[in-house]
Amino acid sequence: MKFGDYIATANAALRVPRECAPRLVWKFMYNFGWKSMRNIHRFERRQAKGMPFFPAFVMISVTENCNLGCSGCWVSQGGRQSLSLAQLDGIISQSKRNGSYFFGILGGEPLMYKGLLEVMERHSDCYFQLFTNGTLLTEDVAKRLRKMGNVTPLISIEGLEKESDIRRGGNDVFRRTMSGVHACRKAKLIFGVAASICKSNYEDLVSRNYIEQIAKEGAHYLWYYLYRPVGAVPNSENALDKEQVLAFRKFVVEQRKNAPLFIIETYWDDKGNALCPGATGMSHHISPSGAVEFCPPIQMAKDLLNEDSSNLSALFEHSEFLADLRKMTAESSRGCILLEDPQKLVSFLEQHQATDTTSRGSVLHEYKQMTPVAGHNQQGQELPEENVFYKMVKKRYFFGFGAYG
Image (tube, rainbow, N blue to C red; front, side, top):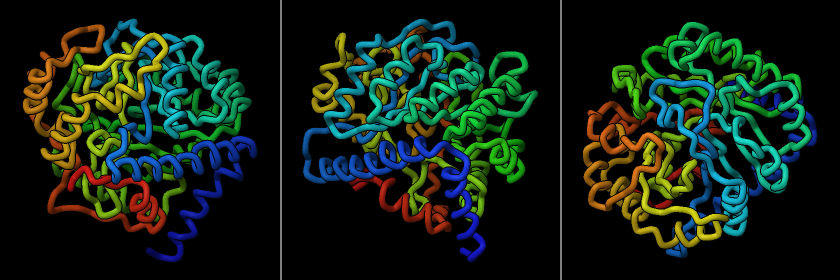
């Protein structure tokens, strides 16, 4: 790593205190940084000592409601399931009792969930990452998020002008999404941009030009995902092939040397070994139906929240379904079983008599129609991190936690 690359990484980090409101920077450093570091240590200790299980982080899909209809999305289009406010508040409260103060808030479109901002505001000691398509993120919403101080919007951009309309089932989607980006910048929020990478947007979004463009628009981090062909309209031909996944990994490693923002993914450790956050137990998911799920795209479960989520700790501790699924996936691959071996997953779900947690009720049939596509497990072609900062962070906070032996 060259000296100039160290300077570039430092400049990316310094953008946050230079561009964002001081109170937001403090909330980020304490609510997210310090508390998450302590939480990871607690989680690691629980895993090492065989103590009662509770994931380090909980992802919460608050509603199926959405104002767009994206291809390859696992959320039921037209679905109306939502967590109650009591359940959402209970999930957060139960998690805090187990040392977890950071939450990913997903949908559908979470800004369509009435009462969400009030709940996040009430839990001012937590930090929330709000996954949104940005079209409802107005200047008034951004101002309120600034006042709250404990939310980082993560705005999904699935392509440039033409691709956004095709992928997201709407009109003028890119401009409407960018209006949310501009609102965040105007309010001096800490915010990021997300992209689910597939064949149709690869050329536009996996590029240095795109990284520099969204950095100029004010984004402080870019979160890359790999497209998962799931849902009622999976469009599996749009999934990356093996060579493209490897090229994507090379691109990320290279750009992390001197990018003007932080580049995030949750697929590889510091040595380039593949990881599944669900298999490691680091993260699990709550669906809009109140089901406790392995991860967002696997929409079948055995465990349901009660009216106020007061049973959440007990569900995580005693769920044979989740424990067996963690074990099975870790023994099968370091990658994503849903992509690499969907029929093995189907057999597991049928054996455990798991229940469809969606409004559409067709998930098992959808999985049975899936064929394997390339995942992120690149055994024999691992590419270690080259940027010292990312290498250090991943080595300390993103590894197998004993899941892979």
